[in-house]
Length: 309
Image 1 (cartoon, rainbow, N blue to C red):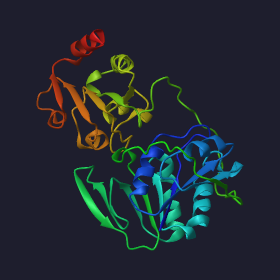
Image 2 (image 1 turned 90 degrees about the vertical axis):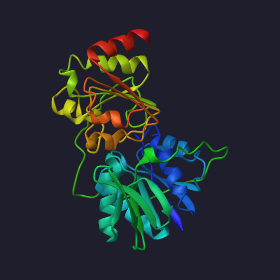
Image 3 (image 1 turned 45 degrees about the horizontal axis):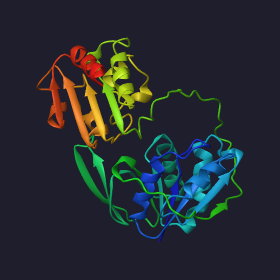
């Protein structure tokens, strides 16, 4: 039994969620091999090789993988499948784009958003926007699944590095091409991996008022998030959305400001270690899962918090 895990990275830096995914892979038993697919990404492979529990790292350093086009990376993974019983990726934008293609090529079913490993064939995953957990069994010869990284602890650093092996023969698939990307620059931590997240909802009312959330987040050295209602209202960009159709987060501290707590939002943050809710409606659903509840006007409470910090 052996597992192949696709590494999350930007060609320069290993994404921290890969460490959580390694912990999940180790629960399957057998050797864990990491695949780093990119261009000029040797540094990422060296970082990945230092994660405890990794047997080896495959490095596909090729122009075909520079922007991690799903068609190219999926074809690469499919070509490597014979050596593995399980193929994994984090349930992020890349994993959700690439692994379904691998599953289709291999003619097997994909299991999505796994939050727990029962045994190498049986897994748990959320359904109905996280209101229930389904236990599913794979009967396919090759298990392909995406992982909800926030549900697993981060693997530690190893004293010794795993060997790095090059992968040759990466093919350019003619069905798509990279045009350009626009990257949002921020000094704040990444939303998906931040230890502290402060999120704002519809009650803030405007983009200008959303600055309160940013001020509180900066005081706590945290990331900024938002409910779908705030995103739909144009207060913030959609890459800050937390919830079923946005980012899934599990920080040490999650502060929900002016968020009622729709089930779709709860699906994205209910695994936070400590949840603080600020809302003027004492009947808001968010209070049912909050560890600390503040009922009152957010425009009075948040400035007071900022002033005290």
